[in-house]
Image (cartoon, rainbow, N blue to C red; front, side, top):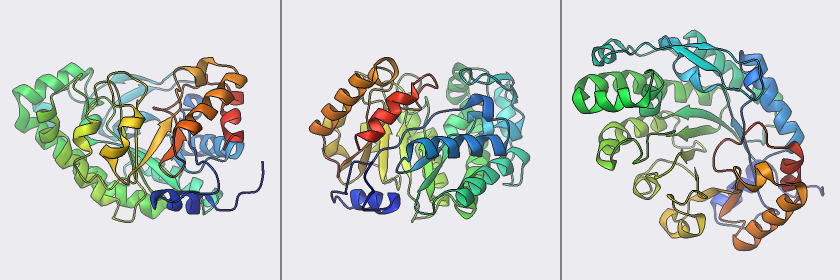
Length: 334
């Protein structure tokens, strides 16, 4: 690969300004379940992945339940690179339990562990590499405190005041935590709505009540200069509605290959000067294709889109089974 003219940070800043950089920018992210048991393992996995592929920003991919373990969620750790951890105990069993949820300090053990993850990665990586730490939306975090999604939906509809007390505690916790992540070395948040900004689970009116006000408070905690990415997960998502709100996100990412969601070429006008991350079918040709197909498909994406508007990336975290050769084939085409 030829030596780059600009640093990763400079390249992103050019794209955010609508300027053409020296080459295509890209970033991909995945779990390393067998290494996520402690701060050192998580940091080592992220640093190894970045060293192999030199992405233009690092999306730090911690174990998903770091958000809720300090509130009492118990998990069985996976020691298999390709198998998720398993939740075995949940603190919320009735609607009344939401009223017992208290804000956590950033020094709570698991939250502190993940501040350490950010600090370790920052200290061992290029200062010109933007780091985005994963933070779920408060409603998404609430959804990880119960045994199943339907329980939270039922509580939202039958006892909304009680759930809102829990959401207040979660939001207070993570608005402070977002600021501490910046202090630890994160440049911003990879703010994920997971399953909840979708009509598969709740209505748009419900997301306006139980999602947006809490989301925006957490994002404000990261400060106005943060480099944030809004990741809107799942099918039948609320991308078009959420685009009307100021999530202070320079980048937007969603499952654009799912037919229930807006494709990228129809999202440019909607998102205005905000940058899109995506274009790569990570559940299709990236996962199942060979190197030649990946090279061809990447070239087709690049022909269709503009490098000043799109950063190449997946629709969501890529499967651990994605061949490293396929990722290298994309990196070589930038």
